[in-house]
Length: 80
Image 1 (spheres, rainbow, N blue to C red):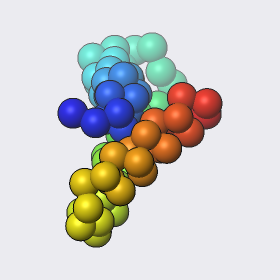
Image 2: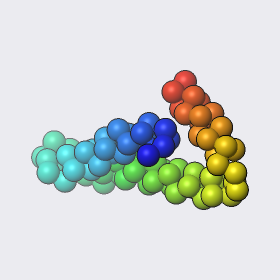
Image 3: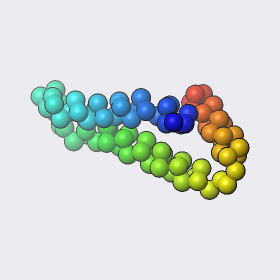
Image 4: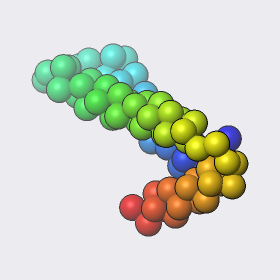
């Protein structure tokens, strides 16, 4: 499991919990669609980031280059 996956997993879980809360407690919202769509948009963005980063790292033939890029992205995600 890479640094990228470890840093994005809590955010992915949070977006799933947002959608789950919206479905399980509809009485808490005036309109369900905006509340559910925020969780869905977050989930979609995180999933797309995971998939695109996997394709990006598959372009490198050398494992050392992949590790250097992963460490760089890990540091950037910790700062942001």
